[in-house]
Image (cartoon, one colour):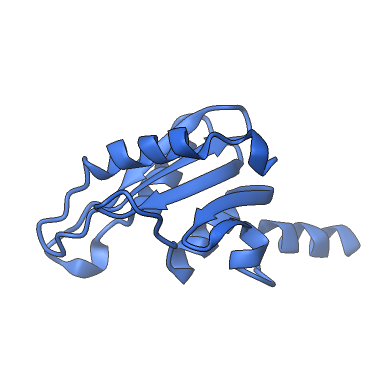
Length: 136
């Protein structure tokens, strides 16, 4: 499936999103883009707040766009920094992405294309709960 993804085009969507980031405190804009299982392309950017703890990361923005535009599962994802270079989502954001990922979701990372399971091994999420519920 990785061969079927136009990573360059997806990265361009992320770069355009990054340009809309609101980062008056860190001055570190982040943009993200993903392909949904129904073919939609969604994006997001970080939105900071003077009370740093309530800052929204780009991945939160993306998941909000996913839910608000009809839901679905993410199949391919990329994240870029202010220079347009690949950026690995933090652990919290990997968990957020896992929650909304299709099995085998692909991520463009600083070390190449990886699956969500490779960047968050042994993750706990909706599939774990479904497996448990189906066995009881």
